[in-house]
Image (tube, rainbow over all chains, first blue to last red):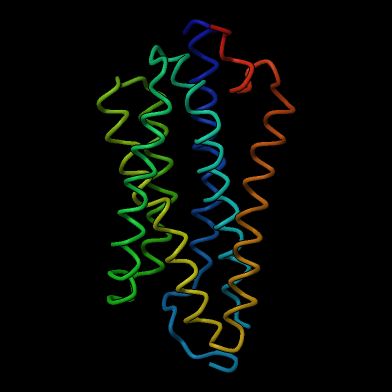
Length: 40
Length: 163
């Protein structure tokens, strides 16, 4: 892969990579949103 | 307060940051992949698709209590979308993929806010929403400023040649 092409590919893959923790954060969410907690 | 807001705030930090990073850098990145001047129209397409997603998805997710599924699907969709775009599939496929990614990415914000209100209750809804939006806005600031500082020669403003 030529360096001129590798830079934008790396940039796009970097955006994909920083999204990966989002999957983990979403996995931490409980299965149901409308479970009464606190003053609900 | 429940355990949801920290996870939702982290999720919005990622989601809003990714959208802002995409809006900032897509033109430069696609230009390097042989699609010069495609970034602007594709960002507009992504945003319009996202507006449609924000109008459609939250109601469906709430009605079927599938908010968590949507919030899990959103980052997975974005990861897959940018992996496909990085392969250089061409203008049409890139447009379709970005539209799908935008549809879910922008829909994630109202789904997360809806979740926070349902989870935190009426008494904590306002402060929870404020914290979530602060987390998302912080991500936008971080992604744009830090990346611009780290790569000043490839920032969008400096990449455009004078007429």
